[in-house]
Length: 151
Image (cartoon, rainbow, N blue to C red; front, side):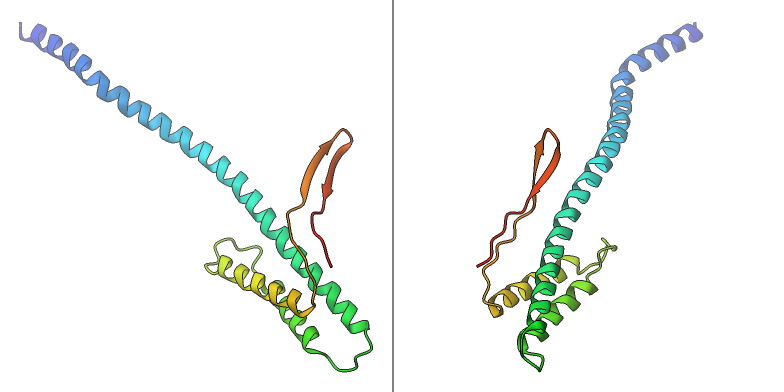
């Protein structure tokens, strides 16, 4: 009789504990799926954000190197304040840690580069507006439109 009571008790325990067991299993499955989706979404976001930063820094480097080349070709014999400032910006960009996303001053250094670029464009007396290259999907492939202007 005790065996029958014990078996009945086990059946009732299984029924009573089913909700808790299913909750635990559901949590584990949800956690695993969420972790997987989170990694995929994080990679996608990181690649997009990294591409934006890379495009921005590349734009600044192109601006600085172009103006440096133009000023070196001018008639001035000694390096001017403009050339030294451009060389400073180029140096900051070359020291930027592209390959190390864990660098603790990544955004701080980017802000310094942005500030130096603003200083350079005012020294060069040039109006520029950096915007990301906007992709336009056409039937023959991607065309990138550069949305900046110079005065």
